[in-house]
Image 1 (cartoon, rainbow, N blue to C red):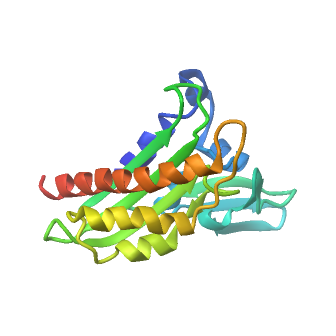
Image 2: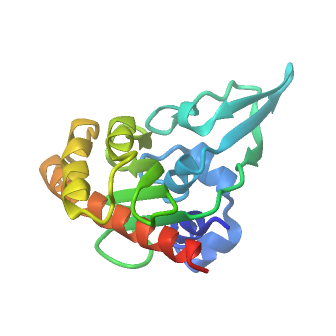
Image 3: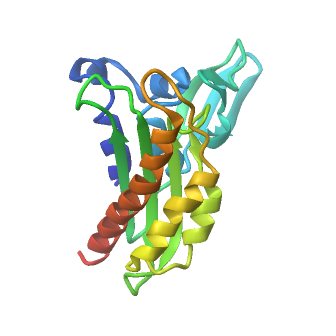
Length: 207
């Protein structure tokens, strides 16, 4: 039901890390590069946190306040992760760019959730999340709004989305990659990831 999440978590660390670690730990570490967070963002995940004074629900999009920083108070822990059901003709995709296939921190992570209309062309809903593209994992609402109602069989629309996303991302330079290189990756790989999610959404609708 959640292939985008499956794709993301399968790229976390090593087999040993994936067997011992948890999704909650991936969230609470709050690393800008966390592979599990992007897919959860596009699935509109809600975090339930509990403390001495009771429990509260926080949309994952609002959970991060900075690199490796969250809204959790000193007396609070994450107790539940709530993921809404996905609709008919949904497609998901996660793309991780790195130098190797295992034990790699993403130089860039792109997650896409997409729903198409009955015509198998028109985007009726889309959510896009980026990791290692800002101080925290982010959704790119301007790019999402640009694509809603667009014909996704027209690659010009996808190509333009790759340009729009550059106005929302804020990658930094580090010893692992320059900001300029990450911008180049975003422009090329965001359309490619959207196309993958679109193909999966159409395939689901044709089953």
